[in-house]
Image (cartoon, rainbow, N blue to C red):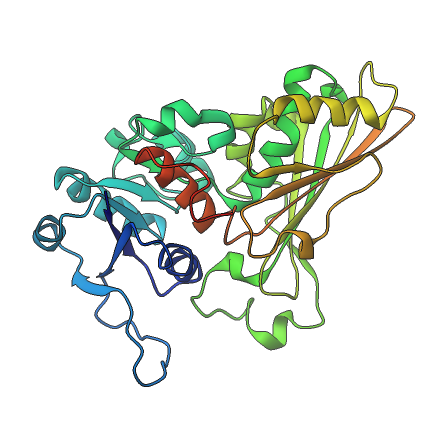
Length: 333
């Protein structure tokens, strides 16, 4: 049985990856939902035919029989669109930060804006499948995780859960992302001349993705130091995470914790002790690769994902598969 899927924000980088990953699937019928009259398409060769386009309205959504809508949009747009899409009978998978933080107070603190749909926050399910799979299956409103928190939580949470992290000594996450993480909207900071042959840190200690890590890793704010960096490349995230351990005598023991926690998980790959991933290992895949080194109570974990796939479109499709009762890895392996 086929499914009809709408994409709002299809011209952005995450939206383009949604189209790339969903288009080859014969059971999916795509509809690109136009919500901005002033948006421009990329140039296409003669004869190009893409998915059907419809207005971003409740009437068009109902007439098309769409089952689920991806919102690859800024948070304020997602808040505007989500209520009527749900009312029209479609499920929503939101790729913005609009519904990730649980309360309007959290949103106000970290996003420096008021939340306009606070009543929906309690309905939203946080879509990290490795942690919340059963809740995702039943979700109507799915909040897709941020890219940085996906890599961080998959690396940190199993170790905090196992009690081997010396939380009093703190956890440091040194995170680096390609420029596509900032979105397609032009800005001075992400222009070619600013980024090429450059490397910069930003949002020190107050990045809006920090509360997502805290909500899912088990750490408190005072225990976690996060710094984001902008890499001069298009895609990929690599996080180097430093902490001191308790009751651990080798890297093999940490690897064993990961292997037990992620046994059977299709998209988490663990490296041998002392080996760590790089960005080429995960680009354009839905994998999160994790490697670890340990020495005399000091541990370093490296976690790598593609920010547009496991950090956005791919994880959104992984969640869609669960919500529609499809094989979780469909279209992603």
